[in-house]
Length: 532
Image 1 (cartoon, rainbow, N blue to C red):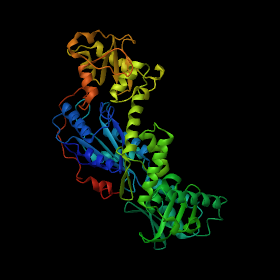
Image 2 (cartoon, rainbow, N blue to C red; image 1 turned 120 degrees about the horizontal axis):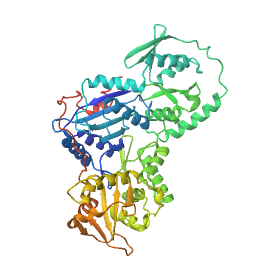
Image 3 (cartoon, rainbow, N blue to C red; image 1 turned 90 degrees about the vertical axis):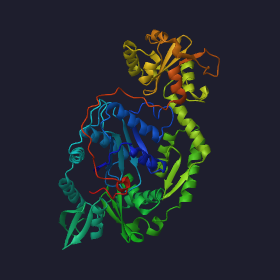
Image 4 (cartoon, rainbow, N blue to C red; image 1 turned 120 degrees about the vertical axis):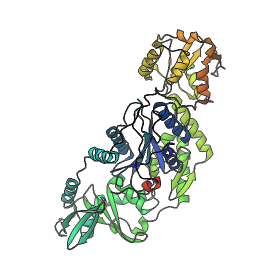
């Protein structure tokens, strides 16, 4: 596991770099935290993310000239899934001092190298305005990763050597393949086997006797049939032999070691790490048959057909739901713009399909507020411009989680402020609606909509600034009471693009240093900058 601190920046250009990867289908935004309304009401843009990070920083500490904190965390091969890497990222940020409540955070998962890796972007300024400590940053970063991973290379290798002796293998090359498929370089020198990783020989071991590992295990033939079925199925997910080996290892803990030249292997060895059996490749499938990969055109045609059939079965299918299916069926997902990248080629889903998916995504997001009556449903349909009320279902109020929103509203109402209550709410990320003689609050961050009057909240302060209330058009298709919307809330709903800021902190901070010497992100993603 490696954490590489990338260059600081005054413009947060790491966002643009990662979003380019997303647009090409080579990356995915795994987590976005503490970015206000961005990405909630409408799809975010890279420019919105950059502007938010810049504004967040400037409002808290103007002395820091290069506030971007950008880190790449990479594991060997697929030792860790994206979900595991995200958990490691949070542990890492806590060790480095970037875990304060309200700290904006972006985590991207990249899929353009043989090693799973993520990129983390945040500000070097904490929510209270101080600059997060950067002293001895690289050394602390290494210590943080070692602490999180509880690294002990000697113990790990000793256990591996001991375990390898219990595998079934028939040749010296098959025995060496056990280590090679686990990320070690293994070669014979002076009658002994050298185990090397990260450019360092970690251990020299004796060449085992080939008759010391006993008879074939009882599940030898059963496992061989299973592996053959898995491999031929995964071949249809893969564009080349490297991708096939990666998928087999990740999904089934089956390693594949190809023998011969890189471009034209003449054979391969299969290591079943779960069962402890090593096979000659030709026992599983002939290499000519194994490497018969489909073309990009064939794959994209099959991809479009699959998406269309899923939408026919489920008219309300969302992008998230579809991507889960695509990951199971094709071991890949599409970008939010509908792009698919495979074997160095790109494909765009038809516009008709993207229109349906975007509408389904919008309806699913609005439904997550759990409207409990006609008025709440009408307000949500106004928020999702053009949404038909018939697409939203009225649900039980018990599904709502309103505790945080209610406490937030009470603290605002009980505080002293000069502007209108609606404007004060808006500054805290809450939208106010006036329908008839009732006031409603819509909390985008916590996906909650509620009637303030029904909960006994004091709404009299809405009436202290009558000039800030404007007449708005009815929002329901069926006749209902006219709806008044505070001017600030009305502006927010119809064009919410400005950034909501948290309370600014002190402008005091550490003197800015240049952190990191890397100046090319591609070096990191192409593995040229990652040294094990």
